[in-house]
Image 1 (cartoon, rainbow, N blue to C red):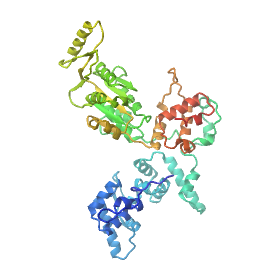
Image 2 (image 1 turned 180 degrees about the vertical axis):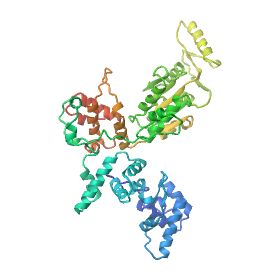
Image 3 (image 1 turned 90 degrees about the vertical axis):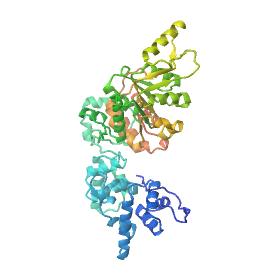
Image 4 (image 1 turned 45 degrees about the vertical axis):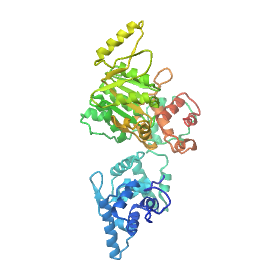
Length: 504
């Protein structure tokens, strides 16, 4: 298990005023110790506050810094131990984000930044923090690979070691934990129905079960609901997701589906299920190719323009069409479509031979009449208008980051609602497991080849330490595409399907 630390790791450099910057202190010391050193270095309180903000160290506002320094001065005046740890222990309770009062040092999100997760879990146990609450802290810290069963297992291992009086550290607890996930016993696994057994073993391989993560697929994962939108129980269930950011995405798509928002921009890495979520929510409000349409892959400015004109009153989804952003013309068309104003006029000024001047047409009826006239005059050839009113909605799903998109044209980010998705490898794996029953995989002929047992087996492999820690996976992303590619190799009865999973 790795460690996450406060602030930036860098060598201390003198500031212009001859003092050491807090950003550098944070790379060498814990926050409270850095605050004390800043105080002893005659730094103003506000400068300390600003430095914490610049260092992206959260949880230390002006009020808390002043409180910590008062404790430090009081301990020092009483000639009592007044090191940073002593100050932290003497700190009064503060309000946590869930409204419960408790010491900051017991808050797992902060612990996870200072220590390994296992150590933080054990400290929560000693502080009488419930397992459910500990799990909530983990979720808040952005760590999604721990379940209640796994937390209980780690605590049990710790208590057993302690009872035996053996010398151990937190790494030993992780090593004794074995494969991740709270597996069922072999006997219980063997009691599954013969039908399921046949499905799981439909393809014979030389798999070594020791390479697979033991995942308890029966243990439900917690769901989050972005309830900022007014909705009924059915809609809340629809937008619920194991990751909060995807619940937020679902809620935004729902607003578009209800006809309350004309445009939505979604950014984030490919293969994490953005398109899956968009289509799932839209399907609740209408039929594909009737109420909403999807354009996928490479897209030119003219293709986008014509697609919008043809589907002027539908929800138009552009999925993985980042190629349209390679030209100023494409950006101009997209900006017109994403405009959240009441009237959206989209223009395409070019010297194409089939371009028809419709700038003076006020209604779609007039535009269509103009095109008909032009077609008659050109032997039935179809023309393209250079201007029209768009009355539908647009969802643009990009694989670019928000920063990359802004470098193309910053106005794109301010034209409409934006959901910027950033996920860790653990979070992607958690979401794949969460959506496993819904994932459908098709062969080259469009035949559904999804089998529940095989999907679970493949997931166990790509989520195993053996796979994730292999040098071939360094600097490589884990996503749905990796899972689908591995699944097809497994389904095809390839004896080396596990090794083929690395070639993504």
